[in-house]
Amino acid sequence: MMRSAKRLTMIVLGFVALSTGSLAFAHEDHDALGAGPGVANSTAPAKADDHMAMGSMTSPSMNMAGDDMAMGGMHDEGANKNKSFGERLVSWLGRVHTMVIHFPIAMFIGAFAVELFGLWRQNRDYQRAAHVMLVVGALGAIVAAFLGWFAGGFYLWDRNPILMTHRWLGTSIAVFGIGLAYLATAHRRAPDRSRTVYWVLLGLMTLAISVQGFLGGTFMHGGLNHLAF
Image (tube, rainbow, N blue to C red; front, top):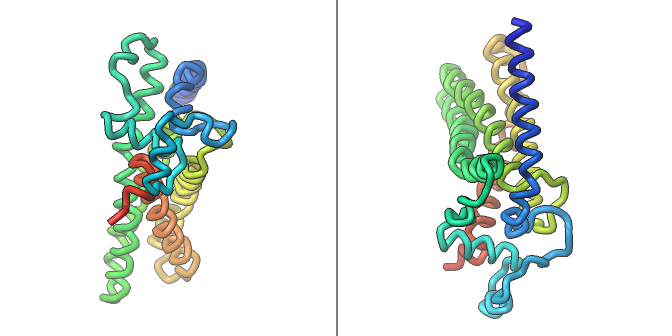
């Protein structure tokens, strides 16, 4: 058991060292997203004024992200060939983030809906399904948040306010998701205990993850202007 734990620790440390050592090479991709400290709009493309003239409600850095997504995403296969394995790994992990995020969103919101339905039917059996969904959602949120740091770079502050809000709200969701799954497990073992804290946290989690999904979609599709009717 101790040998397995040491081996796992070495693998994790090696992976962290590889990722942090490759972040400098992925800096250009993160700059395009408006990640990291610096002057706001410092990465604005030449046609940013055109976007603003058309009534865009986004920052130039978000417009740039939206334009890149429209052309096939931030990933440039031609440029990728010149990158090392570590650089490609960091880039790939960041791109997987967009694949994983749908699962925790569905699980948390679904668990809230299942709990409400069980409350309406006055049937505690639905709590079991909600418990499973919350555990899966918490695990998915941890993975999504982890991959999100590769997508946006390991910065504590971003000049793009949308990205910064998305970064820290997602990290908070992963942390509180663990607590929510723990509360669900505790209530399964003691069904007669008060569920007030659980309901408050579940409601806040549902609201937070809804806002998080909106921010992610807004950021990747060029800002609030993509919702124009």
